[in-house]
Amino acid sequence: MLRQGILDDQMVEVNVPIGERASNNEFPMSGDPSNPTFVAMSDLYQKLSGSGSSKKQPTERKKLFVPDARKVIEQIELDKLLENIDIKKLAIEAVEQSGIVFIDEIDKICTPREGSSYRTADASAEGVQRDLLPLIEGTTIKTNYGNVSTDYILFVASGAFHAVKPSDLLPELQGRLPIRVHLKGLTEDDLYRILTEPVANLVRQQIEMIGTEGVTLKFEDDAIREIARMAALLNKEVENIGARRLHTVVERIMEELSFQASDEDSGSVLTVDKELVEKRLADVKKKTDHSRYIL
Image (cartoon, rainbow, N blue to C red):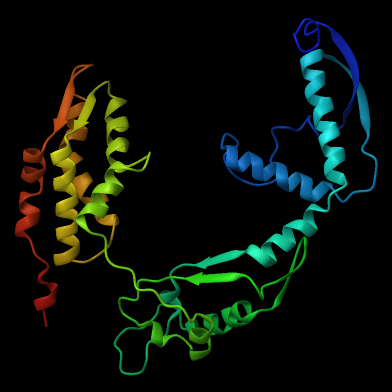
């Protein structure tokens, strides 16, 4: 009867923990409560902060319908099971044995050698490298959940290194990052995949934005190919800024269409074809980066 839902309209009395589920909408961390990942992390944070407590949590007796009472009882029993597991210890072990730390933009703290005209914005760039050195070499860090050893944590660093070279890093730091991989620039095919394969790609973003005006926007495949080709060409001839170039190219194409959509009737269809892309980017082809010729 319980599984069939016959008793769903019945009320029962259960002991509900005070302050546990009543503040279900309060999150210890800042973020979007509608994001499933954030909700999962918040629940884990609550378990980590409360699982070690030996005090019995106060409860109050409430009358609830059977479906609501089942949820409360399931949560209470789940908390009892988690109390028997040292989550903090397991988390620290997982970090120490399988942790990966990604350090991005490491070239921004790289000090160039003497004779170079490039200077970093921060005068203490070399000091930052020396602060990172013990972490990468292996040390013990004190955290809110216990001491964490970085001896077996994998550190991965990346940077553009336009004005400096990896060899400009501290020799000690270079020795702790022995494997060096040089990535190739994005090709036309790579940019085309970026425009089509991700769920929230730039093309879909433009379609959804124009759709708020009640207008349907369509991109032909030839147009997307031309966008990728122009982005790759500009990266090659002007400055290689990677996939960021797609934003500037797409915005240039959509500049007039964005204003035109508000004047269209609801249900209208706007099509972006190869001819439109070539027309909007015609002046861009003529312009070149003359800064390289200025003394």
